[in-house]
Amino acid sequence: MPTILCYGDSNTHGTVPLTALGRFARYPKGTPWPDILAKKLGEDFTVISEGLPGRTTVHDDPVEGGKRSGLEVLPAILPSHAPIDLMLLMLGTNDLKPRFSVTAAEIARSVERLVLEARAMIPGLAVMVIAPAPVQEAGVLKNIFEGAEKKQENLNLLMAEAAARQGCRFFDAGAHAAVSPVDGVHWTPEGHMRFTEALLPRILEYFECVARNN
Image (tube, rainbow, N blue to C red):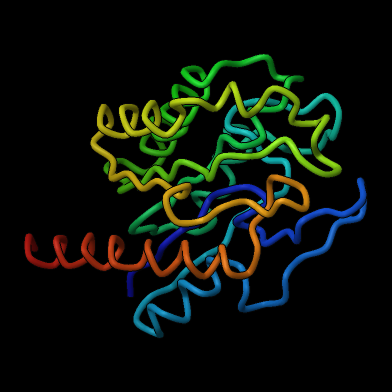
C-alpha cells in the first residue's frame, strides 16, 4: 500500500480564509485537499496530511514563533511516517512575508534544500514539488503579505527549475486553485477540490510508471 506524505502549510492544514487576525478555523474533515485525495485514491493508498499554518521552507518565524521552519521539523516528521513512497511538497507562501526578506529565487532554492535534506534521510525518496497558488494582498492579511504579489513573480518557474535539477516531478497549484479574496492566501472549498482533481492524474501517472518499471 503506497504512502503519500503531504508536507505543507495552512492550505494543506485546511485553514479557512481569515476574517480577523488571530481568529483561525479549519475546514471540516473531508474538505482539505489531502482528505479529498485520500478519498479519491481509495483504500489502496495511505495519504498523510502534515500541514502547519505559518510553516516556511527554512525560516524560524520571529513573530509567530513555534516550530514554523519546515527544515527544522523535517527530521522528526519523515522517520515517523516512513516508509514513504511519494512526498508532495508545497511550501513557500509564508516565505513571501516581508519579515523574511527573501527573493523568489531564494524561496525556490529553499524548496530545493528541503528536497536534498529529505533524501539525505530517505535515500531515493520520490518528491513532487508543488508551487503554491499566488497570493493576493487583500483582507486582514494584506499588511502581513505586503509586497508579496511583486515578490512572487516567476516563483512557479523558478520552482519548476529547482524540481528539474533534483529530478523531481513538478505541479503548479496556481494553474488550478486560486486564493480566496477574503484574505488573499487561503483556498475556498472549491479551490481544494479543483486542485485535487487536477493533481490526481499526475499522482496516478507516477505510480503507474513505478509499477511498469518494477
